Image (cartoon, rainbow, N blue to C red; front, side, top):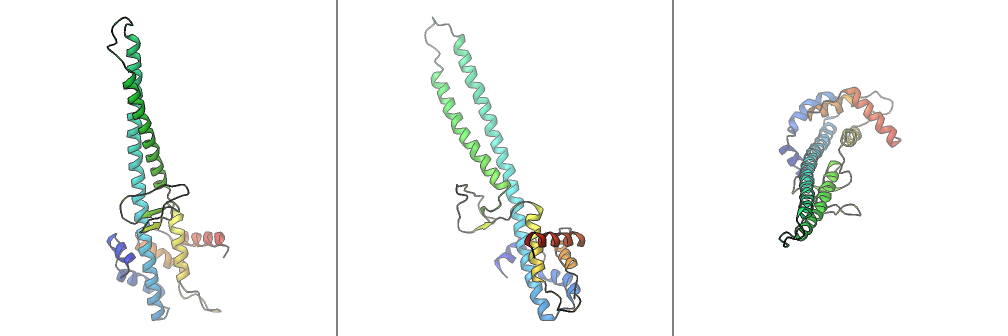
Length: 230
């Protein structure tokens, strides 16, 4: 078992035997050896899709969590600003002929330094959240420590990193449809199709608990062909 399949199985991918039982009737006109090879390719693609979907879910959850943390820092800075204003207002109320019992300057300066520090952290959290919310082309770890290092130029590659394909439906689904379409054999020249490609691909989505109709697969394949000019 490949590492991708092993990981995907832990994430909920159905056993290979279920794919075999569900897809074999749709591909029964293929030679046995060819059928076995195609089913294995489909299962590996399904494993990779399962991992990609899990990565997308986890990164979006982290993006939301980081935004909550950023908002807490922002709220704290609002209170610091209020405290600074109150201290300065208090100083104006102090009678000038009284001894200098109240010197707010050091406290105000300390609050300003703290606000500058927190402003940097707020910006960093916001940037992290933005990268996670739309991480197309960035490097992230598969189910490892939650770690993204934003750099300019873009991102630091690290061992075990993997390109995250994006967060939109078509960003994940269209490449999967294209890969499945590619691994399914074309009909021999001059002969009719031996199986319904769109029905097979839709069935694979169903095995991944992702409802896609046959017509939606047909539309996706047309869209992909227009985009690739094939």
